[in-house]
Length: 549
Ligand code: NAD
Image 1 (cartoon, helix red, strand yellow):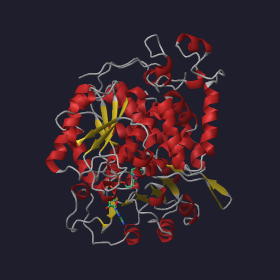
Image 2 (tube, rainbow, N blue to C red):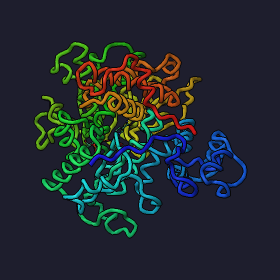
Image 3 (spheres, rainbow, N blue to C red):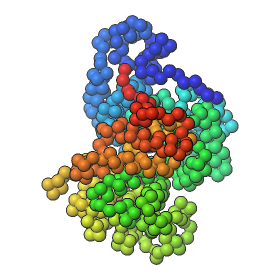
Image 4 (spheres, rainbow, N blue to C red):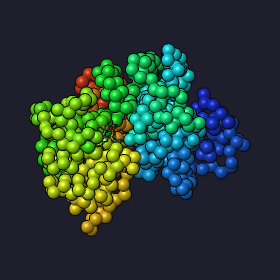
């Protein structure tokens, strides 16, 4: 069933609820900012204190309160409560303070929030579809009151680097979709977070009285696949053309689901493809400093999971786009996992690693792999905190004039090294990107400003471009275009201070440019279903929600 879109108001209309119902509708509520005329017209007189605040005053008040809170988790809870009360104000606060707020509504704080989700749960957001709903998922979608254009869905099995958090993983789709609205202006009403609650194998949660999900072990095998398939079929019937983003599925599901659906419908996996694009953009930026082509690099990954193989695949495609053969590009790309270097004669390699299993003698540890392979770049995506030891960093600095060091694991406790360590142990020569936020580092009279290789530079723009063009698929070519666009938007001042990504406050402009590049690919490849606009940028910008009253 297709749910008719409710009007997409920034302000109440004649059809809107009135009085108390209006104050309780987060999409329409302006709180104390309702004007005198609105208070008369909308039955609000007497329901609000006399003084009318401007939206700017409300933003300032929220920030004052937020900064007075003693912990990031309490800030997360306060922001969630605001989100539930007044969406426009929440998004205005996020947009105007993105540097400060993103780490609170997304990584790293969202990791802690998911771990405590049962305790901090106040109001449901999005849809919880459980294994008990098999056979009637279509009926559930009839309960959703808005016309979704974008679904972010997880089954909670691999939340960040934290493992199986079951239904508590819902914090991730909620956080991601907040970033979609804040960073790319996808209207909140079009965003639907979904938790596929297939159970959990997390014993602690199964015995936790406050765990919010199904108290049973995970569905697996055919039953799991049928459940996901029913969800996808029902979602596409309820919301024709809806873009579906897979999020934080475990390896064994993530690769299989992506390969099953990616050439048929508009889906993507941000952990695999979004991560790949943001890392590739970082490499392009680093090469603006160190010189040389991507195809000349030797890239060594610590980790061989979704992020590592996703990045490796896109790096190989990008090397090939520079003119080298696939075999040569693969020879330049290596993985180390928990059992050492991924090489051909290792038994039991899972399918996604096979492409990178080279003919080489076994190497047991990362440092020896660096000494043996002499990489120009190391990329940490194994969620092993501290794995880039001083020796690793010093060795990279011995081998390379400008070593490329990306410590992308998060949350912060899982980071391979801190920014300070990366710069200190390479004599300030590292071209560094991180997965967790770090403050600027002062070293040898120079100030380094590390920036996060955060997927939020990529997925909002990719999603916006795919939705705006009505693209039938989301392709690797789109992610490559996104990576080139992002690297191009890094300005010389950023580069000078060691930043490989643009400043986060530019994110809406960045997302608009990425959306344009993605939409161009959709039109060029005949994937778009929306008539091609004459002015692509104006068209993209016209789709972007601006949180104003
Ligand atoms: P994953 O579970 O798919 O992969 C983890 C990989 O690390 C596996 O291949 C595993 O074998 C390997 N590993 C485990 N212990 C190891 C060890 N001691 N030595 C070497 N390898 C080891 O997870 P993923 O989705 O690839 O994510 C990995 C990390 O990257 C997480 O912390 C995640 O939050 C982070 N990540 C960051 C970004 C970003 O900053 N943009 C994006 C995606 C993922």
